Length: 447
Image (cartoon, rainbow, N blue to C red; front, side, top):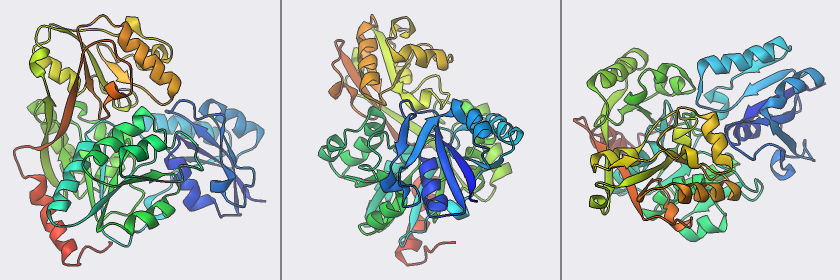
């Protein structure tokens, strides 16, 4: 009899691990995926078109709360943990439940889950959600193009709609993004890259994605999600660390693994962190990955019409995942409000509508900040209603996607943009340049 398996996931890494390890393996039978972190994923199915001939009816996706009944009722043999940005302690609590009910608890390693490209791969990862991967991805693409090379970006999965239709997605224009009816979270990742003339791939089946993406690239740029490990084996692995959360680089799964294999460690946000915080992160790099090149970086914040902020009561809207499971209490909009001498940052919690009330209940560290939650149409409506209910003079949107184009906002608003900027040195160009030169000379092979 095949061994029975449940894969714990969040609509991303779980599907990838299934595709590579279990889809064509008759020795294992995947009974279900469990879902966490992302709303409205449970009670769906991984479709038969993607699950393969061993699963003609597809595979059910259930809420993670259903794990223990599954373990008991189905006598599950193996639990595979396959999502990211959890404290090590929480991962072991989940392992303890599986072990207590008789199942093995498995974390699949990179040797079994990383695909090998035919061209060089530069991957951008992090030790936590919200360290600044996206601006760094754009900066790396700029450096690659400056060498006369064509980068193609492959984004960590964000398949929140029709999974079969989203198996392979290619975005080269805003029309492509609209055609896929992308959520706010997806738009925040794809739009800034498309705006810079870059081609972006994402989806569910990363073997098929790799075949298409490498066919039009000189170099593939892996743009990671959360603090997950890359799905492609990198030639250069860049890992970001956040000194505002110093110490987290040792405490979160799989962020610590990311740092342990970093070629370049970028200490982000050095312009807003304290010297003590920066020193603590440097110490972690020295202990865990002493061979990595360390690059200090700043967050370049730009606000067109910044003078309008002074003396105003402002509502700050920040990137949702960074604030929620990323654990951040503020972002670029908050920094912009402080820098421009806003009279007050208004607390949006009393005005939260619909699903946003549960977000604040689930993440009590959030105070004078509104996370841009928009995983579906209902949540977008709740976000719009909450923004319009807050008594403020001005809304500051620090989301990579221009929410003023997607929502009907009744208040005046400004967009806060943020990007990568080098710190005191060495610069990203100085440490990445020789590696790019090696690719050009044909010496950037896999290791």
